Image (cartoon, rainbow, N blue to C red; front, side, top):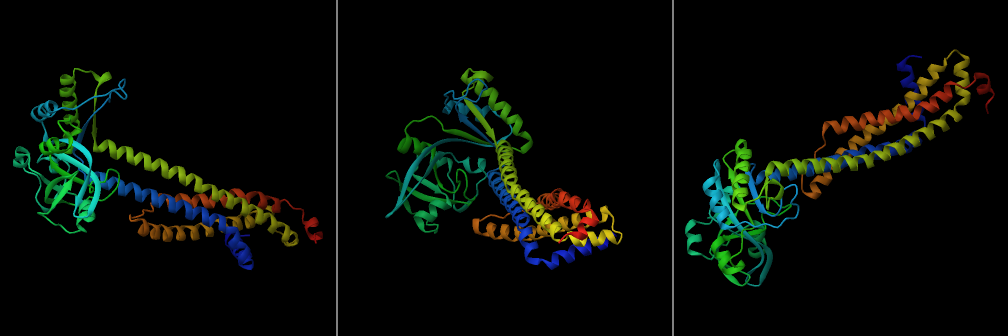
Amino acid sequence: MSLREAIRAALSSLAANKTRALLTMLGVIIGVAAVLIVVAIGEGLKADTLERIRSLGTNLVMVFPGGGGRGAAGRPGRLTEDDYEALAQGVRDISAIAPVVQTSGTAKYRNLTHDTQVVGTNAQWARAMAFEIAEGRFLKNADERSRARVAVIGTEVMNELFYGRALLGEYIRINGVPFEVVGILEEKGGGWGNPDDQIVIPITTARQRLVGNANLSRIYMSASSEKTVPAVIESVTSILRRLHRVTEVNEDFRIRDQSEFLTTMSETTGQMTLFVSGIALVSLLVGGVGIMNIMLVSVAERTREIGIRKAVGARGRDILAQFLIESVMLSVIGGVIGIAIGFCVSGVLGDSIGWDTVVPTWSVVISFLFAAAVGVFFGYYPARKAAMLDPIECLRYE
């Protein structure tokens, strides 16, 4: 029997039992579709998260208080104005540096209130954080010197207090202190540490009116280019170790850059996607068991047909090929249907959850090949059992 004849015979057998064939393929369909949907959501989430991180600037270097050395986990630390001055004067290859004192606060406009983050900083913060101003202006050096009660708000705050209108010149109260809104930050998109849900005020005003003479919460700086980020980190480390009189093993500060976040997020989301995809592949194995079960039933139902085929000259390998191809066809057709469903459902889910889902080519190829492998693996035993049947016993079978 030629391969073409074996495929034709397999398709004829499947067509004669459409309902049973569809139910048999259901496990494979669900398995393949589930794998593609999970991968699409995971890859879409990863792309969306990485894009949000990149939107904060790939040159951003952040300094935080607290132990960062190998032997200093949890070591308390602090950042002071002297640290900021030393970094501003001693670190080369930076285009902006901004000290930050940060606190939570309640913003109020008329009868509307909104809990948000209040950032006290200087005029270089927007450049360091790669923020543009959508409306109005950002902080000026004069605002810091005069301790002006002016505020630049994120779009989330604008939506909550002003119903989405850029009401420049209006006064809001932050923890009871009035501030004039002079600018609106561009929208970055929500997510971890939502950059749109914050109010930026002069650092001198924050210390005088809101937080007292507090130490710095962090220091942001923007390297002149991505290539200079490692040199900037090395320079910052050297200066702070000297000022704080610490070594690598007992550092009381931490330095982070965007490449670290990008790598961490990429690895984390990738591992989660693979883990959940592995769980989804279990349904493919369940579908394979269903295929084996139905193929064994098919062998029992067609025992007399097998005997007739052998009586007229069919060899054992011809019977093996016929049933094995039928099993593989069940898996492959189920895989194709599952791929189509996976594409459709992932697109609909992407629209509903608000980010683009991505179905990578590798996930389609792996799902298809795994489905075909399931057909071969679980179909071989029934096919071999059919091939080993004795033709005389088959002809006697009722």
